[in-house]
Length: 181
Image 1 (cartoon, rainbow, N blue to C red):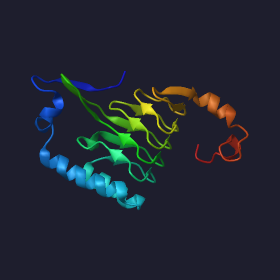
Image 2: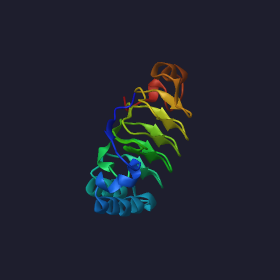
Image 3: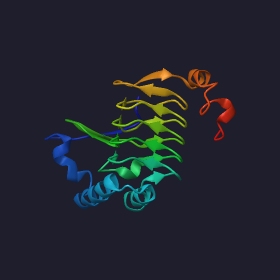
Image 4: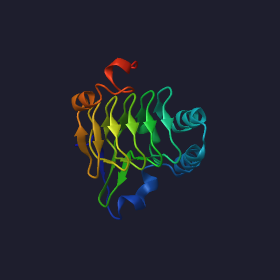
């Protein structure tokens, strides 16, 4: 189960009540900063924009690829560890506006995580250190550290131990060449 806080709304669906949950001017500022970041080819500038103006917590040497879409309403609820890659056109959500409620939840992405292109990460999810998320994955629950996951809905393809066994003799990822551990 994702770790979200639920807020009941009355009357029209929660999206119609958007600006009672978040400031209009905050959304305008976030939109401008995110659009600049989505098209900026300079990773250090992109990280600086997101840290400085959105309040995101981003580790050293983390790379947000072109067109990554952080949450527009509550980007400060996103934490990404060091040396992580977020693939092209990935969406990271920390909010859900539904008919009778809206939900908010932190997204925590660990160190040295690889997230493939066009993935969607839902609110309240934690992705453990060293995990790999294949392209196009709908991440609707936590991902264990070191696991390889994929699909819609997301499933564990390999556990950390299975992946280590598969890569034991790999010239790049094998034990003898893994200098980061």
